[in-house]
Image 1 (cartoon, helix red, strand yellow):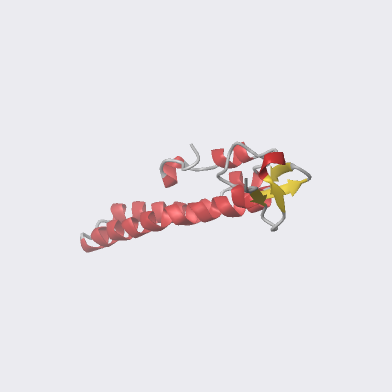
Image 2 (cartoon, helix red, strand yellow):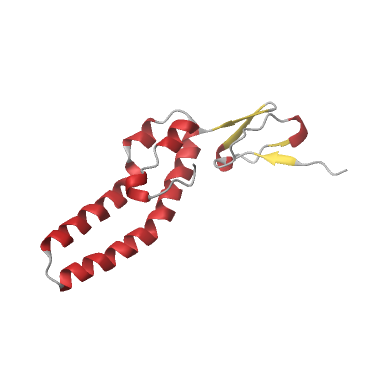
Length: 123
């Protein structure tokens, strides 16, 4: 029978049958080996989290560009202002203070701003 290995973010590997593996695999790219125990490197997890925000917000920004252009064509100043505000929130999402202050994976997942980004991929 072939062995299965788990490789951490630094390229270290361990036999999967001897490892204590986190139940949540969303941040697998942030796993770090300490003997046979796998932990999540919070700095690496935050990078993964921010990359997910950028992935999710790209089509939202594109859609908001359309909203802004329609408001511009209609010379609707309140719609333009609302669009500018929404795009600003989308751009600022990866810099949210809740992300920087998260010290556990649970707190990091809770930092997903559903009011700006929609449903969390970590729910």
